[in-house]
Structures are given as structure tokens and as C-alpha cells.
Amino acid sequence: METIAFRMVLNPGMREEYERRHAQIWPELVDALHHAGVRDYRIFFDPDTHHLFAVLARSSDHTMDQLPQLDVMRKWWDYMADIMQTAPDHTPLSQPLDPVFHLGSPG
Image 1 (cartoon, rainbow, N blue to C red):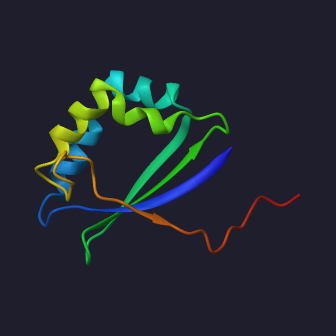
Image 2 (image 1 turned 30 degrees about the vertical axis):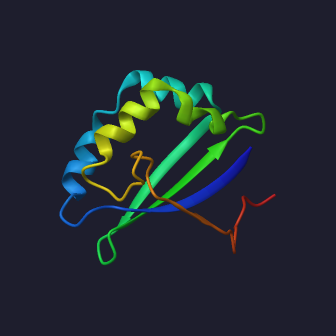
């Protein structure tokens, strides 16, 4: 299992809408993420900067690099493009984050 983190930017005033949309995440998107090897996915919000901090665990044989080719992923990005910073093709702009500390379980 591998853990990665990245940062995205939410448009000001869009937190509630972002949370609403994710509370109603499409089952077919959840299935696609799980099928790609995503095992745990958390997103945190910094209200001072409007940054979203995402942390996910993925299997060692993940296929996340194929997600952008899926219709459901493209549709989700189109759906989210009006409330966050994206590239012209609606891919969310994201910045990978480098790990600097990890406290594991004792033992």
C-alpha cells in the first residue's frame, strides 16, 4: 500500500457546494476509484487559503493513471469545474505534496 498526497484549490465560497457534491458522489465513480486501487481517500479544506489537501492510499498495483480515460472520471471533472481551479480540459489543477513525516503504529 502506498500513500500519496496532493493539493487542489477550491473557488472562494464553494466549500458547502463541494461538500454537497461529494456527499452525493456517484456510485459508478466510487467503483472506478476502488477498481483503480484506491483504498482510502480523504480531502481536507483550509479556509484561509481555499486549498484542498487530499491524501489517499492505493494498492501497489493501482491503475490510477488510467482514470482520466474513463467517461465517469471526465464527467465528474466537468461537474466540478465550476467550483474549483482546473485546466482547460477540466482536469483539476493539483500539486503533488512531498512526505516529510510519518508516525506509524507501535510495534
